[in-house]
Length: 80
Image (cartoon, rainbow, N blue to C red; front, side, top):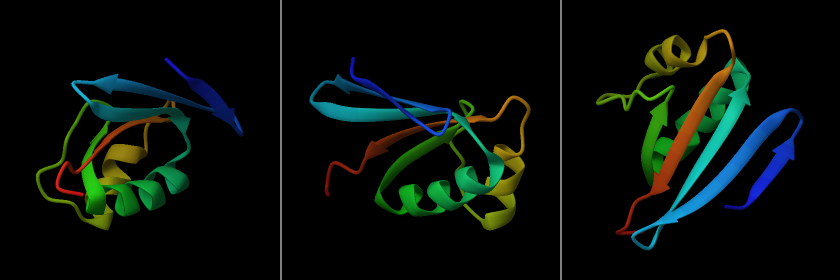
């Protein structure tokens, strides 16, 4: 499983049934909301294990404002 680090954020990728899943741990709230907003447009996003059915800035802020910082898990939309 490849792993990388970016400003304290741990990023891991795994392949499951041919789908790449990316996990980012220790994501600060502001970056979590911004990245979450972009990622949800192109796939399935979970924040701290919660996959929001409806996404809004307020919902992302609620999910991202945690201590310790959030964990984002994202898989691209297979339809691409």
